Length: 351
Length: 189
Ligand code: HEM
Ligand code: SF4
Ligand code: SF4
Image (cartoon, rainbow over all chains, first blue to last red; front, side, top):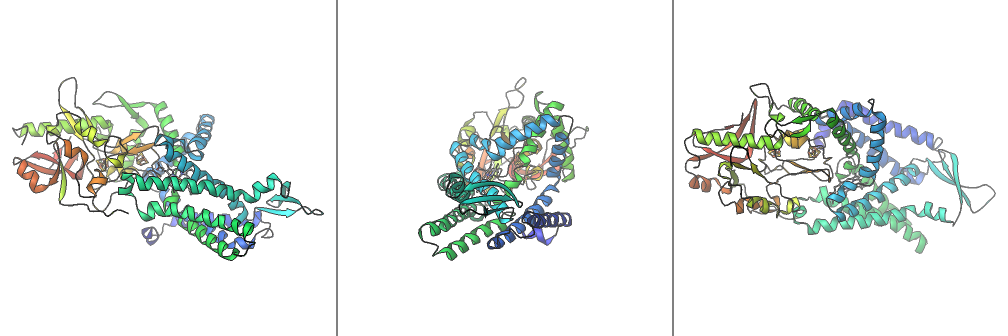
């Protein structure tokens, strides 16, 4: 992380500044010049603007790496091609399947999927509620002349009205209670794996793997504390509950660009990888000169030759062909054959 | 967190010419907890139509790993012991760049899980000072894990080599291959 800032990346800095400014402008527009902005949420707003800056910065640095840049360029090229409709539909389907429902995790294990799905859904729904509230985009007003009809306003325009105490008001005002429960359950399922699975025990780290889970639970529990306080304690501990919750959330926000949570943004690249595979196989497959079988798209092999060159590798062979033309099995076989030949040349097969 | 006791005196020495294709290592590999009971070692005939030669391949843990370089998701990392770890599960987007760029043909893509997995030298064992599963069961000595002195005593006519030539590219690895005495590298092609 320090390395990231020691060598300030100008392009990334400019993009991140634009992103952060855009958020501030949207806050002004959405809250009608701060008229509808809830001053109690100011610390959350600062946290969010910092997070946007950090995420945009890291995303931009990340996109400058040769393999990432290539994937990004190709994804855009394939999406906005003559097959736009096919690929756009496909992307939307995959957005639901792989990003919102993370179904691919179920093939790693069922409990792993449940744990992650609960935790991720709880988080994503909470974001969907809290971000517009923090930005002052949504605010609630009492319908003039009544005392139990509430209006929900978006960007200052009335979008819904509901009766206080009715089902919609319970959903609207207690939503964060409902989303904190799956986060806690999901995080506990993921923690349980981390204490029981020998492989995870050997490779996990405190800051990389445990802290994110602990932080999610801390956010949820302190959030529940605020509700507990005003439901049962008549607000006597409000200060304490509000401050502890704000601290955990702001820690989460400022850590988002650096730690494990950055994967939420990085994972969108998975959609690009999916499109790349579909379009690649349409354009034609590469055949391994050793196994004589198809093993990957020719586009992929050609792109990798370019990317490895950019990264300082050169697998070009004397006859102009490339080591990367071989399939993984082909590569292992030519190595074994070369080893055999070297042994044979020495006059002894073993030794 | 567990205490890591990686023994840097111990090394991995492979000699695929000795592989008899018995698949014992494959079974043992599936016992490794870091890859979730999935076997990661590669073992197959080299050219089934013309010879009975088999080969075995583990991750060579390259000094400058091509797999990590080409990963668009920064999912592969090398630690302070020189072990190149399998993909970080929350990052890997299953693009197969590493599968196709590794000069040794090591990483495997789990298609449905959209995840790459590969040998990490039984990190659960080696980080606790034990030998990797495959090396403990190999009956022919194709896979050996121990000190340099031990292997030199066992194979007086061979020398461990850590340099591979693939065309214009030279690759240096942590895992060593046993070559005839006097060799400094293996030229693959
Ligand atoms: C939006 C779509 C998301 C996708 C596609 C996604 C994907 C993933 C994947 C593939 C893993 C690795 C799971 C495994 O196999 O072990 C993971 C882990 C994790 N994700 Fe997500 N994630 C998403 C959203 C979120 C959100 C919103 C959060 C919470 C802020 C989150 C928090 C975590 C945590 C804490 C882990 C680590 C679990 C562990 O290994 O202990 N993810 N995610
Ligand atoms: S052998 Fe292949 S998978 Fe292993 S470190 Fe080298 S490039 Fe990566
Ligand atoms: S398959 Fe996963 S680990 Fe391999 S290059 Fe792609 S993202 Fe990286």
